[in-house]
View 1 (cartoon, rainbow, N blue to C red):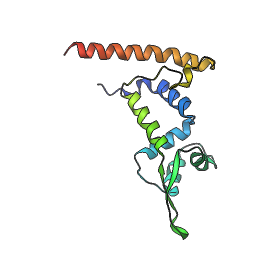
View 2 (cartoon, helix red, strand yellow):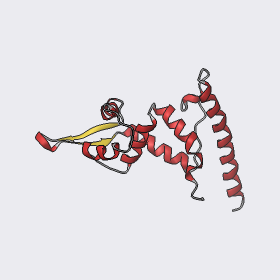
View 3 (tube, rainbow, N blue to C red):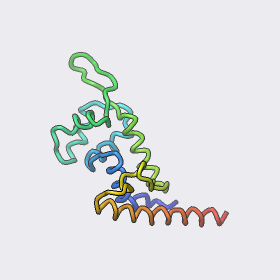
View 4 (cartoon, rainbow, N blue to C red):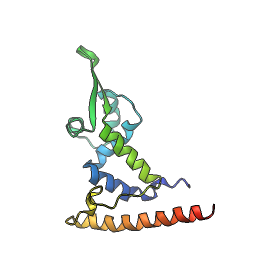
Length: 146
């Protein structure tokens, strides 16, 4: 496969944001933290300097179940955090879609496929249908040459 992973970044990112209810900035932060097994708040603050400022961001990530306390040390050592299973599954799903796996087209797995949804969801839904069909044809033609 060519290194054009980001060709379909926009619809995949939109799908992930809708399915998991995560903002774009928080998704960027979670992508950064994905390769970090454990981190401290000071590690997050370094990355946080290059994204739009939000005082409640980390508390929201904790509250929404994207980050959890791994170990709580007494006194001044601070806490060690890690991404939750929800976050790691979300990021793994994102990478899987970038690598060519289909985006789900059922309303149970993709909120854009519900009957009553907003116009933007319908536009992306139509694009996802075409994208999945195109990828299916590419897989078929790749296997045909073997």
